[in-house]
Length: 202
Ligand SMILES: [Zn+2]
Image (tube, rainbow, N blue to C red; front, top):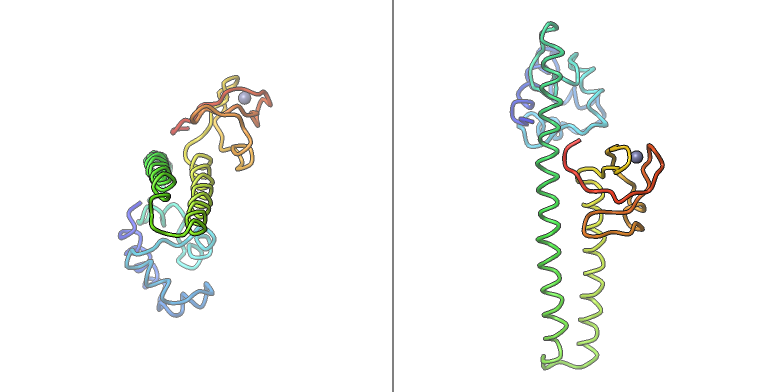
């Protein structure tokens, strides 16, 4: 999504409706700084406020996300284009997330091993050495949970039996047997267990 274009569009629509940033902010129960951030393309209105914002500006959510008025005759085409674009963007960011997960995991593991092996050689008290190892272990556990969260939300898992693609719950992912990213889970659609692969596109 083109945040700058959307920002300009919000600003235009606001002026068309004869509203100052302050007046619009009051109607939406937010600060005028938030409006200014949207209009300069520094931030996007979050989904919780989008509908109210569109109501105030007398535009549709689609128009807001595209950043321009849509002629009714182009409506379906534009909407489709937008959905495709958003899907592509999600795929790209999912792919990036999964790469970050691997890089983060490898770096953490290497650092952890180096620390555990090296800490004994440091000229510090034994109790301090133990403390360092405990802290590093806590850190690695936290990283594991973060990595798992990435695996849960990035992309989808595909059921082997009915090919349904879905995002599982965190606890499903946490407790499932797995080999790398392939997990043994129950499909929410056909309710059968299978080894489900991670896929990026729906
Ligand atoms: Zn299934």
